Structures are given as structure tokens and as C-alpha cells.
Length: 233
Image (cartoon, rainbow, N blue to C red; front, top):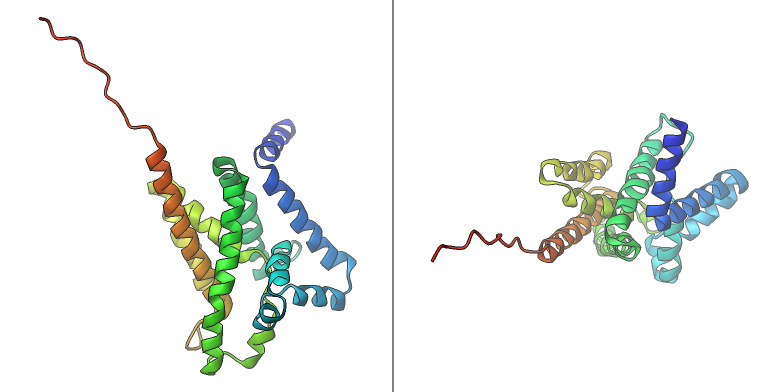
């Protein structure tokens, strides 16, 4: 069993090395924030990379890039909702789905999709938040509320991956959408901005997954019927 697990791990690392490196980076920054820095120092770090409106206005490139270096969750509080989020984003999103996309389409396309989802969902959420603030649907504190991590990118690759599954298994796509819908706050006129971001990320993933599916079908060689027996003259 140990040898089999070691072989499986070796195969995983060799076939998706960029994902493994990214996982290592995310785990390192998480340990740094939770075990090395004080609570106040860790809070300053995550606020510094949060993609809220104030940061996006003052230093957009820094926070859009820096937010991709952290995940908002826990690895120790296994009975908490935050741990369930970790399993979905870091586990299913990165360790499983991103690795699968890397093996199937290469690291460039896989991580391009991940980053596209992160950027698109974040930036498309901005006008929605601004309208909600202008109408009083969100409190003013949303302008500088903590909002960091990989969940938008994870949602995008999960949606794309679900669409690329065999047709009989595409009900998994419903689960991708159900996660933010069930976990969101729907008590106001609009759901919370994080739920809006996750739904936008899922939409980006579905569109990109459909494009990849169409491209794969076009690239598949046409089936040419084998010639039948020659007719007797």
C-alpha cells in the first residue's frame, strides 16, 4: 500500500509539476501567516493583498497578483465551514481540477484559465459593488472588507472541468454553482459580493470549458470509413 501510494504521488508530481509547485507555495504562505506571523501581522498581510475597492483603486496590480498567493481557509479546524471551503478550493479546485487541466491542456492553458477567472470575477464584481454601495444595498465597510485568495480561480477551473467531463457526469456542474449559492448571504437585495464573484467565476469557467470542448471536437480526426471489398468486374 505504501509503495503504491508513493508511486501514485510520484506520478502526480511528474505529470502536474506546476500545480504541485503552486500548491507548495500556497501552503508555505499559509504556514507563514498562521504559524510565523503574529495575528496582527498576518491581518496586515492579508489586508494588503485584499482585492477590495480601496486597494483596487490604489494598487490594483499588487493586490490582483498578491491575492493569488494565499488561500482563505484552514487546514486544522476540520469541523468548520472554513475547512470545507479549503477542501473545495485548495483540494478539488487546485490539487485535483487544476492538475487535471495541466495534464490535459498543458500548464500554460490551465493556469491561464485559473488566472483569467481570478481577474475577470474580481474586476466584473467591481461595478456591481459600486452600484450596490450607491443604492445602500451594501454597507460602506465593503469598500475595505478583507477579500483575498484563490477561490475565484478555483471556481473557474472547477466549472470548466465539470463541463469537460463525460456527458453522464456533467451534473457535477450543478455542484459547482450550488457551492456559492448555498454558502452565500441572500438576505439583502443582492447576495454578498463574494457570492457574486463566485458566480461570475463559474460563468467564466463554463464559457471557457465550452470553448475548449468545441476546440477538442474540431481537432479530433474525422472517422473515415474503411474501403469495402472491390466490386467484381
